[in-house]
Length: 227
Image (tube, rainbow, N blue to C red; front, side, top):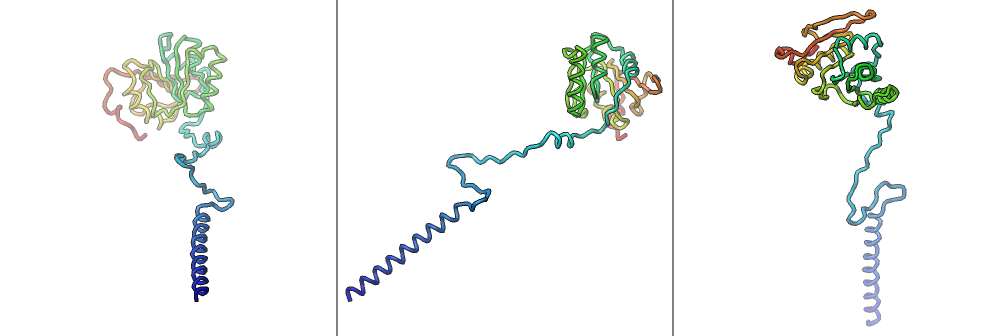
């Protein structure tokens, strides 16, 4: 009887030991990722950091919004635009959609003005800076990659544009709200809707429009136009 009781006790002890061992193995397996798995056990006290997606320069360039295709303004038109804007050495000229920078570079080189070019295309900004360096006016001009509708033009005494009719109309209230009275605005090829220009000039078959910001801007011109 005593030997049978000892055998039963031993069997129960072995069974309990096997149960505990099996539970530990199962828990360890559940916490260990399988080979090739992307799941990792977090290190103690280490913050979790979400991976940041990498965007290639080509993909970024494809996502850049371009409302206006780049078409360079002929030099003869640039010269006449600056004349209509009465650009001088005391002026700050802003060129909206500045492309390769030729308008502000010419204003700085020929008239001694300071200039700012704004364009949304990073390639054009890089090209404009290189052209300004070549022309020796890098200290008088700067170029900003920016959406025109989010830009501040209030520093300008002259503004030049070569955009599209609908873009001109979207910019019109922004220009009239930001610019001081007396600021000259010159547009190549396209007008400003029902804001009648003071001058209209033809150069080599191209039309140039010129305005001056008035002391009192009519309310209808301050409103955004749908074009």
